[in-house]
Image (cartoon, rainbow over all chains, first blue to last red; front, side, top):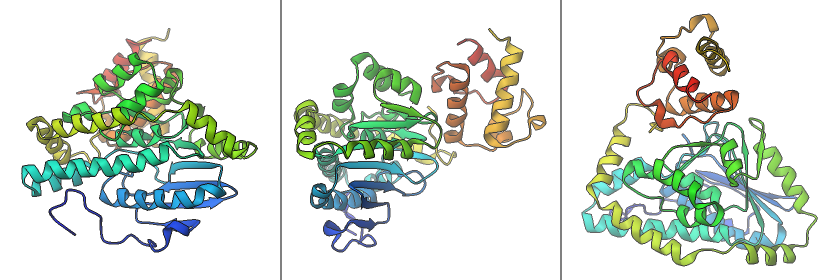
Length: 288
Length: 80
């Protein structure tokens, strides 16, 4: 692995060969399967689907495969197989470790490259002609919430929690969260989420308009599958046209977000925030 | 509106059920992290259960420095 790259491609994921033509794939951090017109993307990187270099590499393979699978599908469901939740966000431990190994200018370049790769992946899912559903349980924090936000629908169980904790680290969301939140929610809710860094339960997020369906504990994937079955009734081209019309991708704001994030990342407050997170004695220091 | 003691009792029962710790092992002044054997993610689970049960919203930053059930009950009571 090239130690000079902040988050370089890891050496080979399992089952990576010919992923772009495979209806089924199992990688180190995620798997996917196409069945009955529904692509299910299952996240399974311990401890809580933290998005680092391995997940990014697997997501890039998924997006490559998605282009080939779209013609056979009408829906994409993204969910987590881990009990802790959907996704706890970026792999801050890896980010901190790699940034400490590099000179400042290299770290700055590496962060930008990492964000650009993440944005390419998330933009592709956001613009996908299929109807996309995030089935959320447990924690949906930071980069995890940004992954959910690229979906057309979020179905959450009543134990799910949503959060943008980035301010605690001296950062803002960098995976496209702010432009997408602005697209989906009223500005007052966006300000509350971002400026307090507090977590919101799923009931509150449904009231705010982010969560489409609120279901019982453990029932999010089942509800997502039932919704996907309903979607099979609709003409795919019509759905694609409707989605393109109603769901703008805020490309210029997304690029601006990358610029702001990269500028903030080089400040001492961020190194201090990351160090505090990494050195916490709690295995998962998610309380503010 | 429930009394503080009723709220406290409900919290202890909910925590007992959520984390499978016998109700009679929990007392109001226990450190719930130690007694329940939970980490911060599981503490958020408890918070969600309590918010859903009491129909309130309790910002998680209000849990800073809170580690016993009695103080937690006071925070919740203030939101009822």
